[in-house]
Image (cartoon, rainbow, N blue to C red; front, side, top):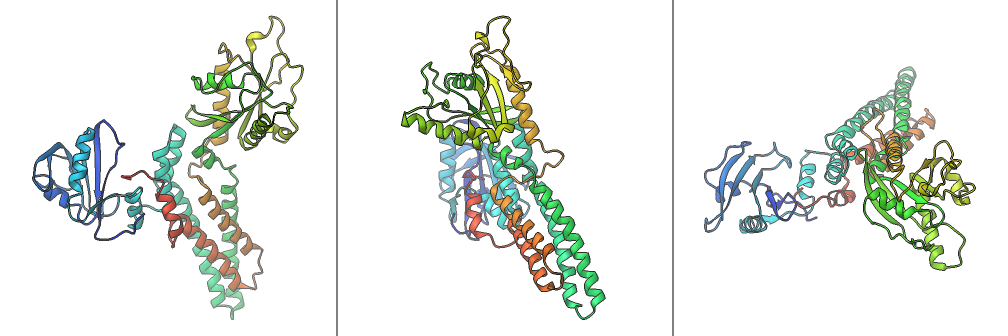
Length: 450
């Protein structure tokens, strides 16, 4: 992303490219008002949607009719002067207006994420809010939308700021203990107060970290691996759940050799379903590689559906998956082949179905949705950690607090440094301190126009 400059005004299409009923073009920067002076008559009042004919800034030929809203800074998304044009969404119309803006002196097309980056630089949102905004744009399910909206509107920021306020208060007490070290009673009492505050904060942050990564899983998707011996109907089940032929189905063993994934929305929760190669003893090197990938996918999954044949005398997990038994749901497929009066002996928590006829699919779908909800539900704590950057920094905070609590109270200068380091990590979470090394990575995720 190019360096920001006070002399540059940026513009971009903020809605999806292509034919549409309405398109929105956003302009931000010190010269944004030039659009009002050069491309329409008369100049609209601030923050009132006004109908206007958009004209070319050079020869005044009409380009389109639409609505314009003028947001003088700093009361705007970016904190700068902002103009938003709502016009007809035809490709030629959008192209003509964008080309016309490019002819205004001091204007240039925006880079991906540059509007949000300017909002951050102008104090309109912090880093966690920016990450939430990006997640909100990418949200595919209702649960993802709720989580992203909470973060984008400051839910996580409020939690972090509460931690930071407590940490700063404790640091002030420890600093006071240093200042009054010649008065033993005052210094000891001050340090003890600060330490008691940090014991409580360490417990709170430890509880926050002990959430089984549910925020990250909800953001990226709850992973379910279809695994089992060859020819038990894993690919057929994938196709039935996806309601399309996503995987090749064949009676020939070893047909599936690479992992095939489909994304599902189950009860508002994102589920990534992976079809894998059948697990068996084989001398074929390419099939061995497929089995290796199956086991790798199963180990990384949040839930394993272990499919078995209705005629299987017993259910045996491979040695590699036995340690993951608490994540396994037994599914006995091909219920349509079971003879009348001979129901299979199933574990109590297993599912009987037929991917061919659809029998039991609704029950399995409901079970998957319930398991995902139980794992990902906010449990009254909607503001959660949603990515590796946030979790790593909160882990740093927790580590420095633990060092502080374990350290000798007689070395107050070192204990104060422990708290400063914890505060530094919290500052990196929201962007209160210099974080240039992560800014481009965060804002580069945005589409152009945001």
